[in-house]
Amino acid sequence: MAVDIKVLQSILEVNDHAAAENRERLAAGRVTALNLISAPGAGKTSLLERVIPTLNGATQVEGAAQPEHRIRSAVLEGDIATTRDAERILRLDIPVVQLLTGGGCHLEATQISKGLDELPLGEVDLVFIENVGNIACPAEFDLGEAAKIGILSVTEGSDKPAKYPLLFHEVTALVLNKMDLLPHTDFDLDVFERDFRGLNAAAPVFHISCRTGEGVAAFTGWLRERVRETQGAEAV
Amino acid sequence: MAVDIKVLQSILEVNDHAAAENRERLAAGRVTALNLISAPGAGKTSLLERVIPTLNGATQVEGAAQPEHRIRSAVLEGDIATTRDAERILRLDIPVVQLLTGGGCHLEATQISKGLDELPLGEVDLVFIENVGNIACPAEFDLGEAAKIGILSVTEGSDKPAKYPLLFHEVTALVLNKMDLLPHTDFDLDVFERDFRGLNAAAPVFHISCRTGEGVAAFTGWLRERVRETQGAEAV
Image (cartoon, rainbow over all chains, first blue to last red; front, top):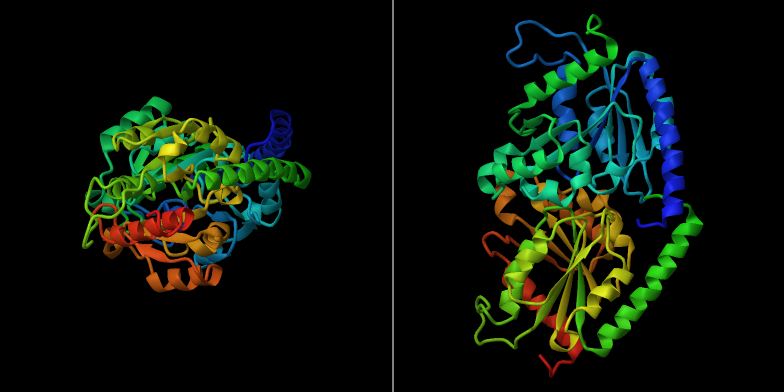
């Protein structure tokens, strides 16, 4: 929603203050928080359903020589309405807090702060924040996360980075999901790569299909690295 | 973006005033304006590429006994960044005005007013307003349109009406796009129908594939009806 510059600054100041507090609190607890942002239906919840059991040790990492250190996840589930995604996450038997925005088009840091209050942070290594399905507004708000992760599904089209540049500029990693549907779409990997690299030189891109499991292991490995960074090399 | 209630009321009042002016101006010119709202990549531009040449008489309506009255379209093209969609529409050889929001997550009525200034309204029957790709914020703003049309692609999932209720409640018609991909998804038509009808008893649902052309004729017929309503039964 467009607001005048003065009001916008005030809103962002309140948000940034709460985000800084969240970041401090997470660092003190050596908890990694990742902010997942995508359009509606790009596969945020499906991605969590894939990676969380693996990180938790409930499923073996594909190709891994030996079991990896167990990473305990929790989820802050942002939605405008319904608790459907939180119910899906609850089936993974991990802590989940539903954050309902009541019409709001993105999560803000003050909501994350309240969500963290309800999590058993002492027993958690990794908090996934599943933002509202929207690639415009959520990218504007720092939640105190360690990194933003973008999820784009190939059915949305290869022109999306150029058309929604802020998100693609801000992400630390990008998941390109629904790769199993690639042959049925006109998604152009070269156009996507060129446009995305024009906005973001560093972020790795993970080609994934949450449906088939393709590419999930590489992304799970990247998540392990993020937790290791937070906790120190010895801990994980 | 969440703002306090007072600021929000003021923004909506300014918007509603401009929307009322747009509506009056369009009615005086017997021009039908339709506000197209969907998530990024659901197929708004592809839908326009399908229906506009048919309405314009450049292609024959599938199954039609005789050529229909020509309907002259124009497009107000809303985007956060890039003129890619406007360039696609320009190839249809009709008037198009690019409205760049510069980061803004939806169109507002004041932008539509400026866009209408740039259109040759005396030579136009139908104005398509292609909103920013977002199913949260755009639904909150009356632009002065005759109707909101929602576009949902089956790749986004059947849970979207329940999760983004305002849009699905507000639409006068709903296009369910990418039906060619239905067999490759877990989209549940029954769940979709049940949830959508819980929010909206009246709006027709058009099952369409912009890729194959399936279902486009029925939707084009519905668009003709809307123009006929505005212009009076004799005119079209």
